[in-house]
Length: 228
Image 1 (cartoon, rainbow, N blue to C red):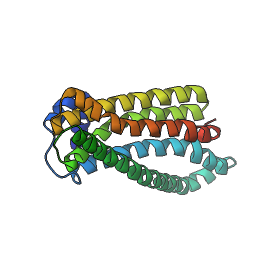
Image 2: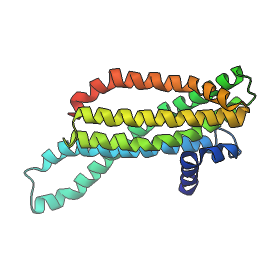
Image 3: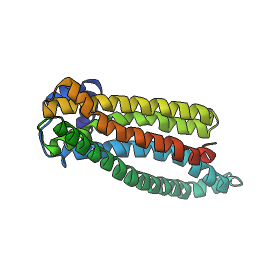
């Protein structure tokens, strides 16, 4: 399973034209859905580690401030079990929410590139577009970078301004790369010209830009007190 994931990840990020030229066969609800789900769970695992060590660990550590010596040896297995349970709860909650959001996002992106390509004279199957879109979720593996910036900001190594700059740089890179991938999908799967493919890709990218603006204007200011 991980070999399959690694190969697809490598091809989509470094050889997207080749990958979408020989797009793997199969239903969109099989391997493509699994691939997008694995991407979301990898990001959820990294995010859960950051949440655990920046939020849960400091709270739990206060419970053992006055515990030392043989007392700590006795309660250590219990503390370890509790820590594992809290981490497991965190990753299940974060993973479930993140997977639902990402699968919905890339499903919609697949529908949008299908609609735009058809409007420009292309001929292709909507489910193939959705399958291709799920594979394009590989780009989001780079979201590990802003997640790690959260950890650095929470620890005081970065200030919020630098965090926001790093986040915006990541988001612009991700949108730009996805724009290219959406154009490749339109070109390869709908057989439209290069110009029309890039025009068709504007529609799904507009959605990503709107989402990015909403996050920057409404969500980031809300999480600033937590990060700082």
